[in-house]
Amino acid sequence: MQRAFVAGTVLAALLAYLGVFVVLRRMSFFSDGIAHASLAGVAAGVLLSLNPLVTALIASVIFAVVIFLLERKSNLSADTTIGLIFTSGMALGVLLMSFKSGYQPELIGFLFGNILTIKPSDLIVIVCVGLFVGGFLIAQQREITLLALDREMAYLSGANPDILQLAIYVALAVSVVLGIKILGIILVSALLIIPVSISKLISRSFQKLVFLSVLIAEFIVLTGLFVSYWFDLPTGAIIVLTGAVLFFVVFVLKGMLRA
Image (tube, rainbow, N blue to C red):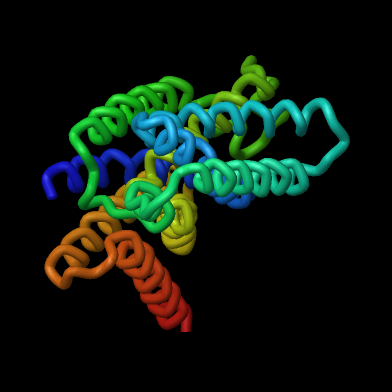
């Protein structure tokens, strides 16, 4: 539980911050595609007896760079490019899994998530990589904010939009894979979208949107952890459902106040 709380706290803040960029730039399919494609990295780690989290991180960075290059060098749409990587990564993961006989709890954990099974080595990777990515996001906060709002504005401010977008792609891919330990491949994109969606209902400025998104994400993750622990329920599912319930409560209350 101690490792779960540390990992959950770090990842909630990281994914919520990146979620603002994802929602404003309409990139939810990117995060979902990277999560599913990272199955190839997880399967490679299991097959080679390496830490699946580390191999999944490496695979996610490769996939993010490939998506960026295909978007720039081909006439394919972003959705088509992501769909290509999505399905190819999943297919490669299934192929690699076929070479490993027997029941594989590691693979099941990555598919559906189980934060209570985080190992000390996983926690070290999550905290170190999470802090590094978080430091980058803080250092580039102004440029990232401009890019999220208007690409041309970011260019006029002196930033290189292409390089910055590639860095965002990599940061997002890495963060999504780190979040897989909490929610699993199937549900991880929810933590990028739900906190920001709730915050958008009540925020009137970009700064407030970012602050509330992080605050709400922390509440959702920690509440979900407590509930799943005390009632012995699936952690990832409870975290997502906690966020969904909170979203509809805020939505209904806002509607009532307007009426």
